[in-house]
Image (cartoon, rainbow, N blue to C red; front, side):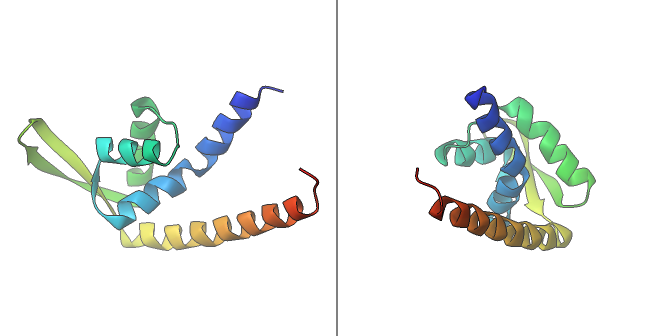
Length: 111
């Protein structure tokens, strides 16, 4: 078993949820999102984030606006839509159920 591959798949599986959590707190630029993910030990690269943000925007969960930057070209800031907030609430409920189920399994395991 390739443990690194399994760990990467686990992270990928919750990445959309994590991004919605970050943007729900405040509008965010891609580098802000990456920095918050890395600070939380969620190892990601820009090549993973951009397609994911595009998919979330195309499904109506995120929107964006352009803002001028003092340090280069204009920046795209993402914000969560009302539909995105509803999906985030559903994901939060799913996450809570999942963590409770895993905690229950772990309580019966000798690790």
